[in-house]
Picture 1 (cartoon, rainbow, N blue to C red):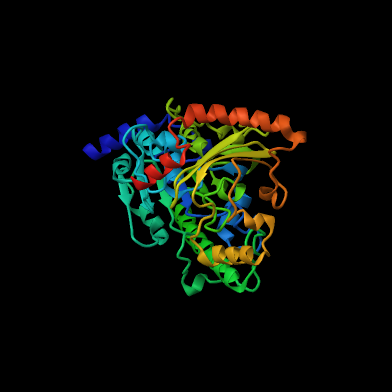
Picture 2 (cartoon, rainbow, N blue to C red; picture 1 turned 30 degrees about the vertical axis):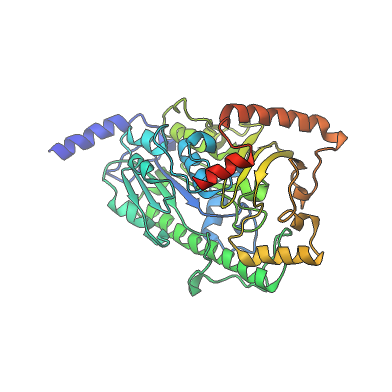
Length: 446
């Protein structure tokens, strides 16, 4: 009798949590919309079949083609844990209190799971954690594993409390290194893969890059299994599933940089009635207020992003003129900030010990060899050359990262406008950020 009463009260409380586009869950389930945030670890924005036909990802492609695609979505940083905290808390990395990789998120400031729990949602995380022990209390349940556990995602559906809507944070470990997918997922031929122009095209590099694509194929398979489980339980039509990366691919000139290869992300959505695409700029800091808006809730004032839910049903929707990002310590002392418009990217390089990520040693080693032999292109040299204090880049063209227009008079007006925007953003959202080598290295030592 008590359980029936509790279910009735929850149903009444949740009746106003959004109409889910008119869809409902299976009989006995709440009519409030469910939410699933799937975050892949080190996934490049072009690295799925709908963007690059050499990548075998039928389930991701299904979402891209049948659901909703944000074609200019950007992250607030290009490092794992700061990006994840930023997504969940709707705040820029320095403002979360955990700006550097491996920083635990301190108590304070709200997050998506807390806001939804207060409205009766069941909240659970499964997979890579990387947020610190203090963040665990924000979820009802946290399921961690030493290895990849994407295959267990459907288990969350089977064991969730009946009659309650849910929010799942599915944090894959793929395609992070090591790239050692089981044989059944090794479908990309190293001899046939097309290498990005900023990488050296060598047999060893091709083998490493093909193994990276195989890891994406692996997580794509388990994503398909989860979507099938949602459909089998009658939940798919009332569930918003968001798929994105925490940072760019673990290759040189991608992860840990503020170029598009580092901070641009796939952002693909399955949701009630959501179909189409949006080409304007959106930021991962906007995801938290967007999810709350879709749940019929207002965003707390401490969120620093703002909802882009209007993009789903308004063809004329306009969201942002600019997106912002920062890069703090990641294996070495770093301090960079960036502002990007549809046409230009401005980066302040305050301090860095390392420019390119070294998670895939064959790729970085091959680049260094090319540089030593004098055979590297200007684009490939960016991994070993000292970066200038400011880079001003016209985005879109192949190899744009290597053409610094900071002193070009024909774009002086555009550069000044973006510099003013970035200075204002730094003052408001990153006043505590490191801008000296001493500060960055002290934070690295903590």
